Length: 20
Image 1: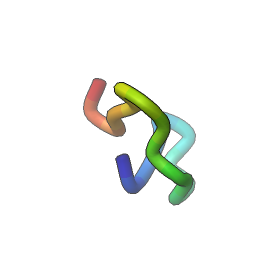
Image 2 (image 1 turned 90 degrees about the vertical axis):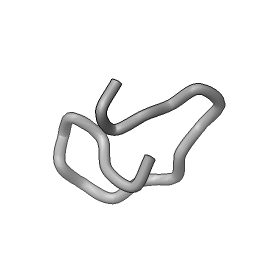
Image 3 (image 1 turned 60 degrees about the horizontal axis):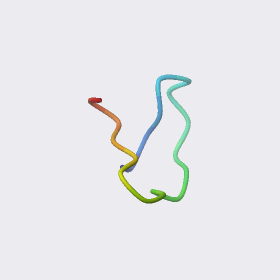
């Protein structure tokens, strides 16, 4: 995930997805 719901670029964690 390049970005989270916050809209800021962060490191993708396990199962983490910007688009859920």
